[in-house]
Length: 88
Image (cartoon, rainbow, N blue to C red):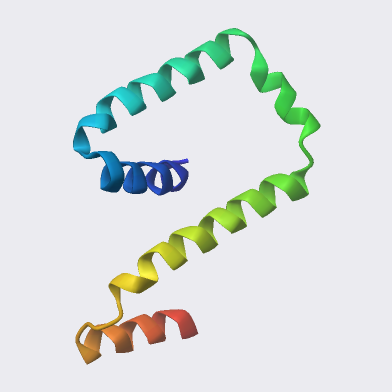
């Protein structure tokens, strides 16, 4: 869940500034509380496990590709560690 929040908050801060973080997080919390009170968690049983696995995998890929530009044009040691991490 934290990764998906980071993917939303990062571009939002880039476009609108840090002043929008607190209202966005509070609104997201209110929505989650309302969904919990309405019993929407029961609807999760209708989502196949393959869809949830695909969502988590896609989230990991998006986080990875969001971080890759930060490694280019860096010191050779950092690029080497990045490549080593990929190989592992």
